[in-house]
Image (spheres, rainbow, N blue to C red):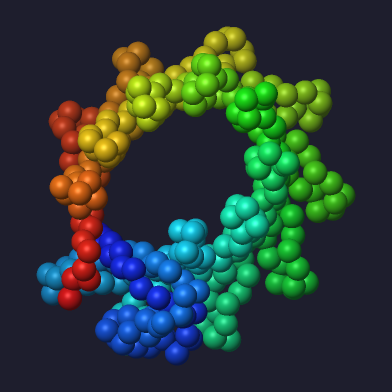
Length: 319
């Protein structure tokens, strides 16, 4: 069982120095403080793991997210606790770039190389926008170490209707041998007037017929303020020419649009009904900040929920 403590502080930061490695938690935190205005805010998530031997919660992971003055994420660092020497070590970082309109243009993922003590490129997502400011393409690439270059993997091409609502997403995969892009998936979005999408139809590309073929669909329901309350997923049976239910997601909300329950169900073909599978419940304080959440799994024999994980969130690091 894992417990997470979330800490949000408004401090001024410099870029995290590599010398932070190997410091204890107090020194590590102090190294982040500075009078620089490069980073305006920081959000830190502490993860604790239960040690069965000494029957205590032990911190083993820390995720640090930093923001600029416009509250945009600049970078996210992930650190893990080395059990053998009880030191903090880098694991992964994500760096973000923005255009003049404060729209994200790049998301770079890097992993820490312990042997060479430096960051190694892993994945890159690049986003472009049309003249209206709508995202029109997402390019995904992976780092190829032997040639020290980025290799194309996937593209998302987005198009919009007259009301600037996303109506179509085409996913293409890259063929390295021929250096060409091939159709892979297509998502067709439908709307009820001006609200969020009520249905998404998923199609796959048939290379033999050079046509799109229906594979599945998502149907959505919302409450009066636009929060999604239900999502039903179904697959298309081309032989019987009918839709087959797959999964259903249901969401409940409290005051201030706080998500209090998330229910995941699967379709039971023998009983011809929905069957519980997973559930998450969340609790909030008087300021509507999350303080705890519990994950459950359904026992089909006893017809009861049993706990599989618990998470706690706090404004202070539990020492």
